[in-house]
Length: 188
Image 1 (cartoon, rainbow, N blue to C red):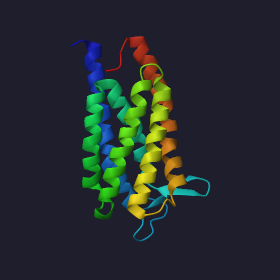
Image 2: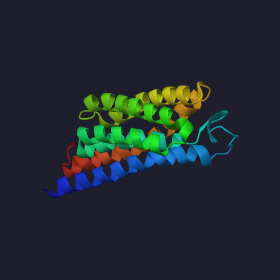
Image 3: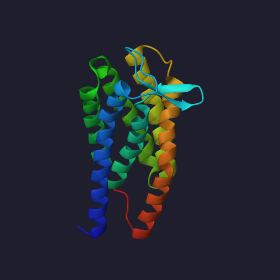
């Protein structure tokens, strides 16, 4: 295995671990961190003027980007396996009332992310990460809110909060792409 191959694999494992940590972090945040934590409801944070969202949006937005990076570094099979494992982890770490919503939303949204990212990523990495993440976060937001709360009241906040994390990650993606080109690192 060449030095570039080892580096790509190490980075892939690092992204995979980060991806896996996003799941329990989001479920913990929803129940414990926010500027407002109403009884029997998710803790909320402001994501835009006058727009609130459950606090887990921070790490779920990041999870979409990390899933794409797992695929870029160690391949689509690892990414697909991570999605299935992530859905299980999501259900395992979710509060009992949110198990079905969390696991289902995660499975469908990350699968949508994978389906959009895969055909775009070789030619247009930044666009692939952005487009796949936006599709995934919309699917995730609709399914999670509907299944968990029977309401789409926080849909705008969910989408905006997750999208912020994607937008904040794009400069890193651009730097990563440039470095990969300079070092001759190819996608898996």
